[in-house]
Amino acid sequence: MIYIILLAAYFIACQVIVFKVTRIRKFINQYSAGKIVLYGIIAISLGSILCMTLKVSWILIALITVFECSIISEKFRLVFKDMEKGRKI
Picture 1: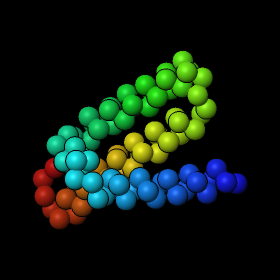
Picture 2: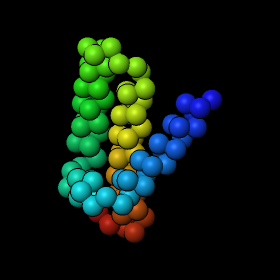
Picture 3: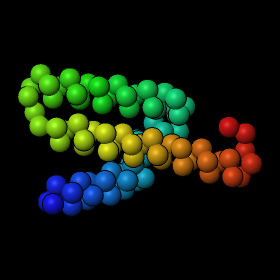
């Protein structure tokens, strides 16, 4: 039960970090959605390899996945926001 509460708190913190930190915002605006998804897949794969080699718990992979999902969702939110305004994507 405590893992679920901590994971929910981490998810909210990731959303706030992605929304507020300017370096991440520049990264999101600089690259296309496909490249951001590819970088997310690479980060999750490297985290998986790191967890297997160091025999770390599964929670590290979950934390990396939640953070990458926050970045990807923010990119697609910005793309859909531009689509609603009628801008060319």
